[in-house]
Amino acid sequence: MPYQHILVAIDLTEDCHPVILRAQDLAICNQAKLSLVHIVEPMAMAFGGDVPMDLSMLQQQQFDQARERLDSFAGPYPQLTAEQRHLTYGQPRQEIHRLAEEQGCDLIVVGSHGRHGLALLLGSTANDVLHGAPCDVLAVRLKKPQ
Image (cartoon, rainbow, N blue to C red; front, side, top):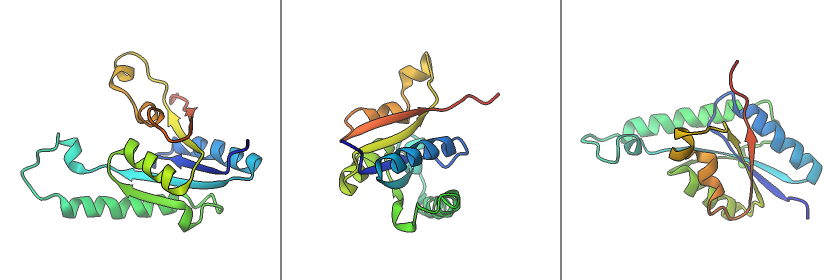
């Protein structure tokens, strides 16, 4: 059964281009719809949840900057229209799973650095997305910088 809707989760780094290209190739081969998502994590999560100040203005600036970056990032991929670019706020695994279900995606594509040892024990977004995903997950191996 060919894939019909592929969701690509990206972190807006240059490493993501090979992930998008792999997903784009799959979408072409399967004549599938392709969507892109970036998740902005709450700043409070970076501080362990307890922050003695209001971060809402900073969070909104971060969200606005992510929107601009997502739109420019998708520029080389004309098939990724504004309706196919999603920016959400929250915990990456939960938001990717929610969006995949909401959009009827049957494949999630993420990049993976293939970490080992301590980094593997601590987990990664790719590993988090795999567990409990509502559909198939493809982890595209990212090359380490030379």
